[in-house]
Structure formats: C-alpha cells, structure tokens
Length: 288
Ligand SMILES: N[C@@H](CCC(=O)N[C@@H](CSS)C(=O)NCC(=O)O)C(=O)O
Image (cartoon, rainbow, N blue to C red):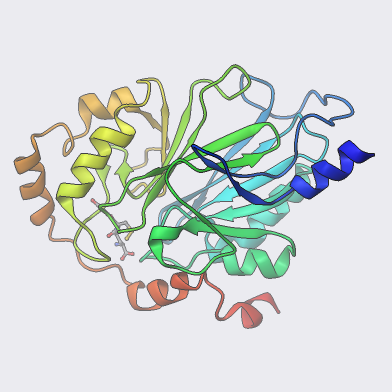
C-alpha cells in the first residue's frame, strides 16, 4: 500500500533532477500484470495513431503505453475541430488521456487543448516555457514526458517560432524502435516551417535542424505537424539526403527561406491569440 501511495503521489507531477526534469503519469513498478494484444508497434507497448485535420493539413498524434493497465495516453498537436474524433478514438482503444501537448503556438489553426481539457477533465496541457503561452505544465529542453513506461524527450527546435520544440521517443530497450521525432513545424517532410513571423529565424532553424534533429539516428521516424504534399512519415536519414532546403548550405537555405513568398495563414489573427492561451477562450461555446 505504501508503495502504491507513493506511486500515486508521483503521478502527474513535475520534478527536477540534476540533469533533467520529468513529467510522470504512472510508474511501471507497481504494474499488476502485462496486457498483450493491443494495436502496438514492434516493442508491444506503444499504441500509435497518426490523425489528420484536412482544413489546416495538420497531423495530430496519439501515443499510449498499452502495456500499462491504465493505458496512459497523450495527444501531440490536437486541433479544435477534431477533438471529438480524437476523444472517441481514445475511448474506443480503452486509453486514459493524460496530456494534450503542443509543439508550438500554431498560427494556422486553433489547438484542441482547451476543448480537450473541458471535455476530458483531468487532461493537462503542455507547451514549452519558451513559447510564453499558457498551459498547465511547461517543458524545457532535456525534460521528459512520461506515459507509463514510455518517454518523450524535449528538444528545443526554434526557428519557425521562438518556442518550437520537438518531442522524441527515448533510446532504450523498452522504448519504441526505431525512435520517433514529432517535429512540429520545424522539420516538415521535404520542407521546413516558414520563418517569417512569431520570432522566426532561418539561421536558427538551420542550426537546430542540424544539431537537434539530424544528430538523431538516421532511422528515426520523422512525424511533422503538417504535410501539404501527401506525405505522412519520413526518416532523419531521408531528410538529410533529400530535403530540398536543408541539404543546402546555410546561406542558400536563408535565401530560399527569404523568398518563399507564402501568404500569411488565413487564421493567423484568430489562431495565435487563441493558442497563446492554449485555445481556452471560446471553450464554453464549443463544448456545449
Ligand atoms: N496556407 C495555409 C498556411 C500554410 C503555411 O504557411 N504553413 C506553415 C505552417 S502553419 S503556420 C509553414 O511553415 N509552411 C511552410 C511551407 O513551406 O509551406 C493557411 O492559410 O493556413
């Protein structure tokens, strides 16, 4: 009982250690039994779904530890319009949604975080401290987000926005192999996030892609927040070889980014203020 009590105390807290801070859901130590047979990847633990929101071409990712009796789950980059779909899926798979996580303050759609919090009480929102947005929990580089036995490591990947982070599954025998990087709008498949607003910097983006993403093992799966060309997944090795922007030298990259001539996202004036408060305003009207 004492152990269980300590485990509950440990649940959903943020704590510091010498090298990294950790956001934990459930400890594996007190697991009564292993559950098999769920839809999982090769290590038998991870439930993984890639979900799409077509108006903003946004990918939302559902991850959960199927081997834990509570099946703790998280959503990366949920969209307000597809919250009901996502919650239905969570329910159908028998998962317990713990966290709604954003890679950054999106400019083209409203995050689903606020609606998720109102429709699934207990869900905690997470965003980087550097984003300066509101959330329940703030992450910094080196932090780990734990769900069951599985972890996401936080890597700072600013350049598209000041507060962009990439969430990477950890290395280790019990972690999914190959590793997975949820790159938000930093690295897109055969592209990258634009750098012309929200504190964007092409120089910074070039450097973080090379130091924080291209240093991952080449077989690391790249899962971006958007795709406009019909791709769903890439690898670090593939992007190092074929990304038409990031394979260039830094000056050429900066020149490409300065001449993208993209129009501003249609929803920018609504999305950015809403996402700075994690989509919380308007929650009541949408939830009813
Ligand atoms: N047309 C869309 C916005 C498209 C866009 O600007 N996408 C961003 C990510 S969302 S802020 C981006 O970085 N694109 C890079 C690229 O090369 O396309 C709308 O109006 O919402």
